[in-house]
Length: 97
Image (cartoon, rainbow, N blue to C red):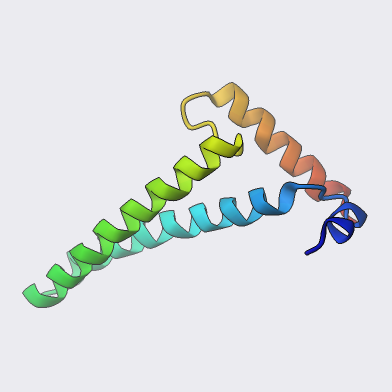
């Protein structure tokens, strides 16, 4: 989306933040689902493959988190700042027509 279209939609520079947040949430979901799958499989080979997928997903989650922290999109250690970010994102979403 071009900056012009972002501004027209009232999103400004929030597109990167929205994409990163969605990616982070997807990574968390993948971690949870993979961990669950590990506990449900009877095959040692499949468990080993799933453990490798879980390791990779956790690593990816860390990379996404680091990116978001560096951009000021995510404050995992400061709930007050994270609340401000969440409120701004919610207000932006509510103001989209």
